[in-house]
Image 1 (cartoon, chains in turn blue, green):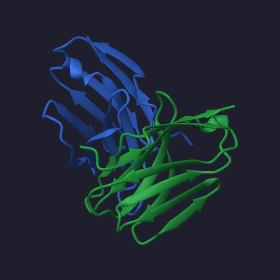
Image 2 (spheres, helix red, strand yellow):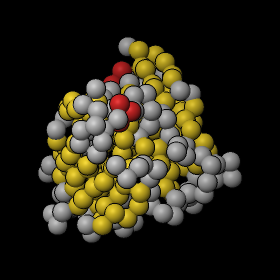
Image 3 (cartoon, chains in turn red, brown):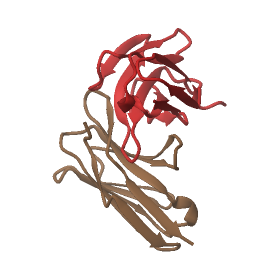
Image 4 (cartoon, chains in turn cyan, blue):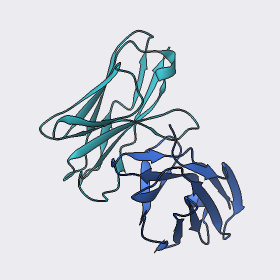
Length: 113
Length: 110
């Protein structure tokens, strides 16, 4: 049973470019959440998707957008990249109902130069 | 913004000793969870305690929750070198969003 998978594992982009990160949730999970983790910090909530809709959003600008597909996989898009967007981007899946804990992928390390 | 605040920021102990990490939070919660992260990898869920529970055990882990003080503690007994990692508390409120603290870096020396 595959867990949460994210691609790519590493990415280097130039300031101003756009990036798309991908996530496949754990089998049986219907909800995907995205987090940004800067070095030495805790994960910061970006947004959560359920039933192909953004259900909740953290304090991130509109440059950050996402999508969830019918098979529950998800994408995170970041436009007009800034140096400060350099971070580990974590995808987590869960069940929408109840006290379902998050299952995390190993993340995508994004470096913006 | 961070909801939880772990203390201490870093902790170094010898193998076999117990490790205690604390977490304080600001607003009311439905549950509090602890996660572990090995360097540069994803987080792994350790234990969940609901707002109406005071203590929970899982193997060598013991978690307490004091909602009147808005605080929780994680105790790892008989620590091993493999327990070396960052530990995060995360709180879930009524909006189901899980908010993480900044974490405690635990180093267990062989």
